[in-house]
Amino acid sequence: MKATVYVTIKQSVLDPQGNAVQGALHSMGFEEVGKVRVGKYLELELDTTDRAEAETRLTAMCEKLLANTVIEDYRFELN
Amino acid sequence: MKATVYVTIKQSVLDPQGNAVQGALHSMGFEEVGKVRVGKYLELELDTTDRAEAETRLTAMCEKLLANTVIEDYRFELN
Image 1: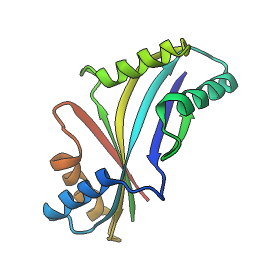
Image 2: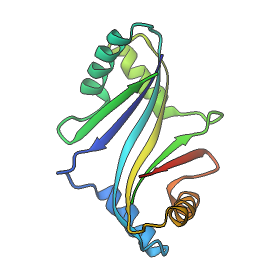
Image 3: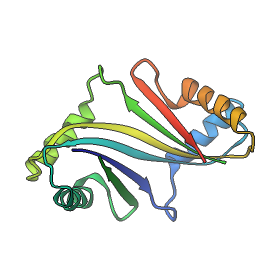
């Protein structure tokens, strides 16, 4: 089973990396760019066929390692 | 218009960050985790209504700044 995990910075938290990217794009002439937020994108191969079990385990992985839940949100897709 | 950009390391390129995540997950007891690939995920607000123009501009942003096309692939969604 393949899992895709998206980790994003919470809306209430400043994103200096996003601001830097926005500034760089502006200075390159891409004036139409408004707010930029940068997150992480992970693809994991899981050696399991039980979808419910995989969801439980993935939630644990996100809570314990992949996301810092103080400042980040996460979501995942299984396919 | 809102754009979502996914930047991933090409399949032929080693991903040490992904390997580190895989190792950490294994050591935490998530033995079912196989290959892990880590990429970037960007959300951009674009001050434009022309979809075709936005696609052209986004392609330029990815080629010039957001992705290192020597080692990374990118794709984006507009909505």
